Image 1 (cartoon, rainbow, N blue to C red):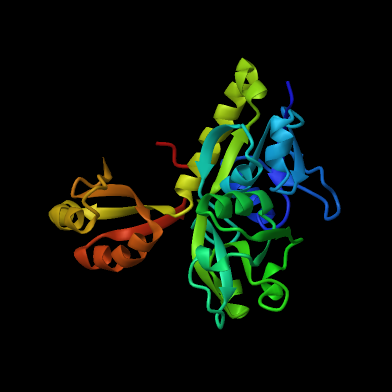
Image 2: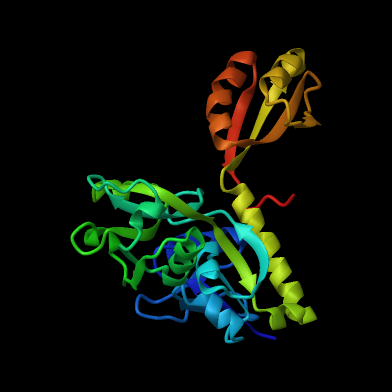
Length: 289
């Protein structure tokens, strides 16, 4: 059994490889190659543009892949979603597919674009959106770099944005949000019905989600005098029950807890002042709930 897995080439590639690394899969690729190598003999990865992955899945050319909900929706592909993976090229925030216009333009809503020209990579998604709004526009396909076309070549664009910085840099503003999108691990339905492939995909999903869960968490362990145990417990977040273990010295205990990394940053000084000592913060690779 060999699973062909489509991995996104381009802006998501480094973040995807890093996620697989934390999940326990070592993926490497030469700079000009579209065929990465992975330390799992049951997986055959291939680098593809995320726009292409939904179509190749639906056609049965690959078994599974990672791509955005935006591209699945644009293609209208009938695929099996295995899990959602909330990561993108810069942050863990979802991206938005938006309608943007020049800051100096009079347009305030999609309906104001009646009769105008829109440039986008999301040609089908944009056509459906404006059609549903009852707005007659010309939607032309653009090979990226849509921002530079406004306002001299087109009146508006439909693009994805994570932070909005590129739009602001080109003096553009958002007037509509069409879709909020995150990365999805998806399979073609024939592969999903195969018991052996499905089990492998479910195992991969568990590890990838575990790596995502761990991405903003850290472990924290410390030694605490029994005399100040209650004070230390009060400092720890109310939803976190620490693991408590006895030490050779009966007057001391060891405490260990998993925290958000920002909580840890704020709590360590408080814990030290309360009497905890030997505080050690360590990274986590996977957290399986």
